[in-house]
Image (tube, rainbow, N blue to C red):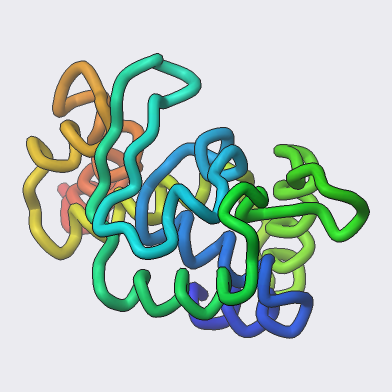
Length: 169
């Protein structure tokens, strides 16, 4: 489904594709993504922000593939420009517009339950599936406990579903 979402979003507009790619590869909240400016990411090794929700400092490594996307997306853009600028004017797109973009693409690929938080949860789910390290993911998400992180990314539900599937009396 990730590849299908990328295809649909790329056909809409490269900005929409890049929003999705950056979101699923960093796990940043949508409010933090939308507040980014070109100068916050271009030529940088890390995204360094103060999270809007928590007020905590966040430092996130930008991997090589993401660096390439950033370079391509930000070429010829002023460093002060919002990364996800509205196509109407100089302001950034807002949460509702991001939701509309993502939701329209999701419906096109046959997904019904999607929101702006889906990008963050997708990052977390796949990170956990690859590394099985809830402690690192908890730190990335600034969660208070591993249990909160597991519940947030839906792993507990997957574990329960799998256990029940294999259980019969």
